Image 1 (tube, rainbow, N blue to C red):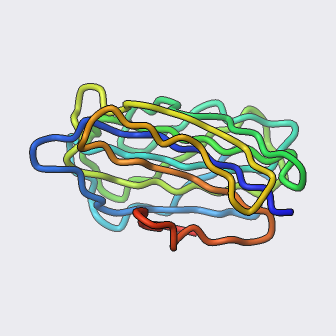
Image 2 (image 1 turned 90 degrees about the vertical axis):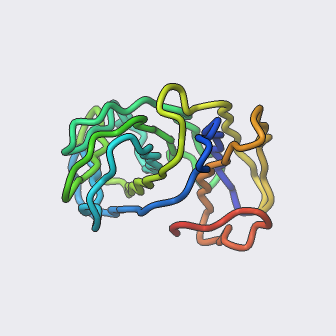
Length: 186
């Protein structure tokens, strides 16, 4: 059986110009540190935009305590940790976001853990333009499934909302073909 660990959140309402994906930066280190960091964003961040960060990790001893970046943005946890079950026992994933961000060049986003560990960990930070700067988070949900098809309610309250989701599969799986969704990283 494949265990899927879903975390979905809506970001909205959007500005009158609409919300658009700008860029992403990621990192998947193989080390025994207490951090996980992206590479630098390839383009400068734009002031006022939104960053959504997806972090997943395999540790029974450490927890994610904060997310920071080199542009001094403030990150808030949106969902998580959502804990895995079955073959993904010990795995967790979380979504964090920074609203109304500072501009910056060569920005690196870092997840900071409560302790160093040798389990696998990864991070992907996504920049979006067009989100409202005051309160971009609308609805959050997290769920765990024990089959290839697990789901969580992706309820939104505004017509212009987007849904951001993170999915972990045991072994490998691809969600790039889910109708109505765009796969950004795998």
